[in-house]
Image 1 (cartoon, rainbow, N blue to C red):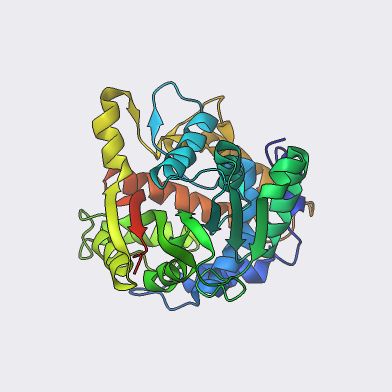
Image 2 (cartoon, one colour):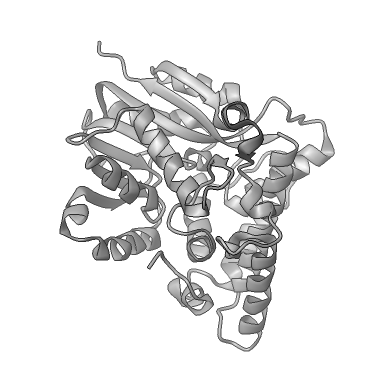
Length: 346
């Protein structure tokens, strides 16, 4: 089974305490401000994933990320290929010790283990995600289980991991939960062996974003609110942070632009799964599918089957979807700016 499949699974997966009315109200209120956000990154990331993890798994699967897509690929095919591409870019191979920073429920980690037979450790700040990762790994057999390690912790301060432990480190759409990227990139630098490679798919505002444009600011804030983020940063900020902590920048580019060039008329935009009105392949993440889910949750909360706050959580995620599509259509935002850095040998 690929995670939660039924609406009832979604609503009973997280405890009522994790998704209650007061927590979603506190969360929503933090984003109703003009200017810079002031909340604690770690607190709100953990709160967000208590609220959203089961919705993500229900609607998107075990891999919580976007991907380039070639016309004709299934939803699952393009998601897995995106993970394999990242693994191949930094040469993850059998025998490597690898770290996944911000693993979610471990979908990409398990796919990369199957692809490379490397030993991969995943870290997430959220206890519910660690629990789900273990549950989802059980059916995969003893060999895959032996290659997957899951830890709960803050990826800006992984004192439970020793210096220069890993051959390769990657992060998939996770570092966006920390505005100051030097904190997370610095930990990657500390934990890599000399000569080791770090790669990350970054959520960034593009050079087309204009902070003086009110519509642009609303789209940016909608993405931040719907995805549990601090202030989103720009391309030069992320690349600069990589350099600041001491990485040699191997390459950096927007994989969205790469796909447009390489795939040409066969390219399917990364935001297309959210934009689609209806499709049998992954229908739950389409506009129609999300509206069906929203209305089911509305009824179930009203009659007491779903905990209070479930509908507000669904509406929060709809805010994300709507603004992600707008940000993608206007090329203001990319969820797949690839940065690769090497730790110097000496």
